[in-house]
Length: 93
Image 1 (cartoon, rainbow, N blue to C red):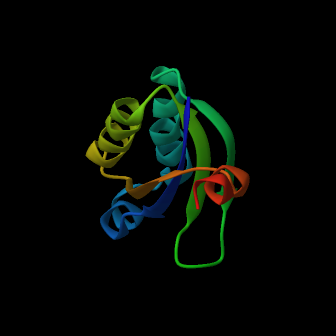
Image 2: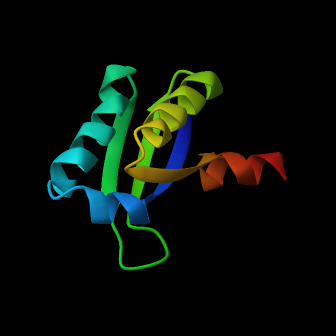
Image 3: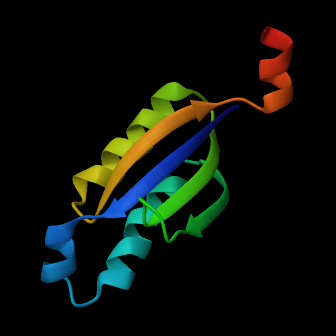
């Protein structure tokens, strides 16, 4: 399994177009489970991004699929980063 962080922002057009925005966001986030991706946690933030998800996927292709499917709904815009633990990185350098 590979670990990824996905940063998400609510699309500004979606904020105007969807009175049930919370439901639409939940529908978008269901894409993780539909792709058998293990979500460790999703956080709401007060920073640059509205949400941050930490998840494990079988490989990079699955992470790409999840991000693409979430983006295609037009509710959330995503940015996804592959990550490794600090200990694993320390052993590399």
